[in-house]
Image (tube, rainbow, N blue to C red; front, side, top):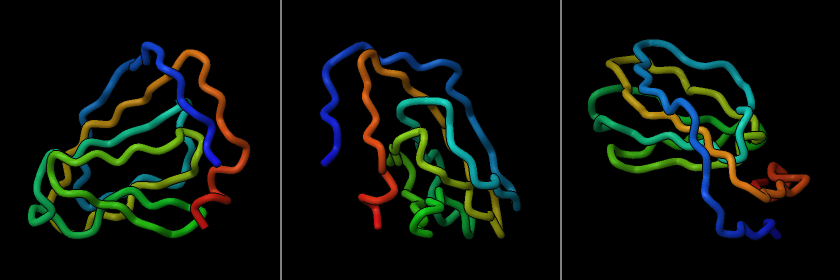
Length: 109
């Protein structure tokens, strides 16, 4: 039920390195077609953390080297870190001709 992605050259402006230490990021949507986070350190370095999706409550906190990719319009938050530090690279992608389906959250329920 998802719109097909057609091949195009993605644009990625200002990827950022983030460090979360006993903190969180409130719910929001990104100004991008696709958002991704790349985990840089092992889960044993911290407790908590991850990306929490508002519509479902699902929290994804992958091991180092793994990526979480999702539509930028999907509301999400940084789940609280309770011990240690979590390092990620966040990137925001735009694709020529990208057409976003109307109800991403509906498909995730």
